[in-house]
Length: 281
Image 1 (tube, rainbow, N blue to C red):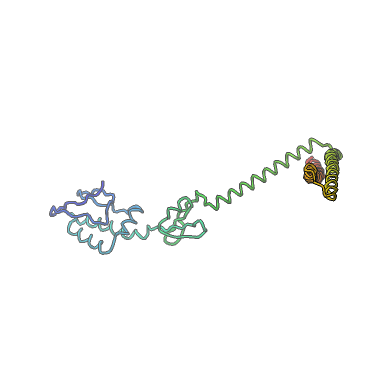
Image 2 (tube, helix red, strand yellow):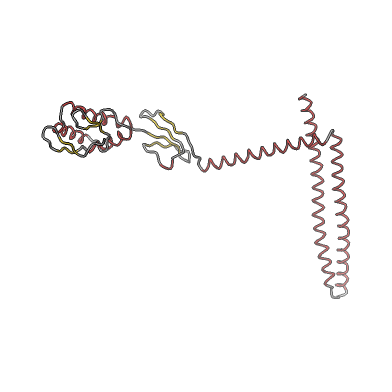
């Protein structure tokens, strides 16, 4: 039941105003019918609110009002005791919070900022001891970025491990000994050399075409004759084709070198796998 705004006194029937420092308190009726707040220490929220409003002057005024309006000495003593307990409990019930912001700076205060919600904090008593810890449930933007990088690095590592395991299984299932690896390498290189020889033939043919076009154009210039458009076009096309063939040949040579390195690595890994297999036995 909530304490009404006024109550009648037993002696005169006059109306006594409710003191301002017990607003919205939960009340319990006394034996004589006059409601007052329970004499026990109130909850944290109530005590802090009352402590912020209580002043020495208001406490003395409350005592004077109680002397005039309380129905009995026992009732007056219970009310005075309650007020004194509330007044004394305010500082003891005050809570200090400790938290760390997004920049790693430590803060202290009696009120937690709303933007710190979910980022974890500690509650300290008046001696500075931790009485309660609330763990972090949210991540900062920097933490999310680092976690994403760690996840990506882990996924890449696992992909490489799985790829290596797949290559190991393929090596053991494809080759019985190192000689077979050498034979496979030679077959692959023969195919690449064949392609390279074909490019070399095209290169020689195109170079001859370009040489012919240049000689014809030089002869016409020397005779001060008009250069045919098709002859100049043949020269330009031959020059462009030579550049394309040269790039293709360089790529083939790079592929051949890569094949040699890959087969050498496969042979070394094959030897290592055979040794591990022998140890496992």
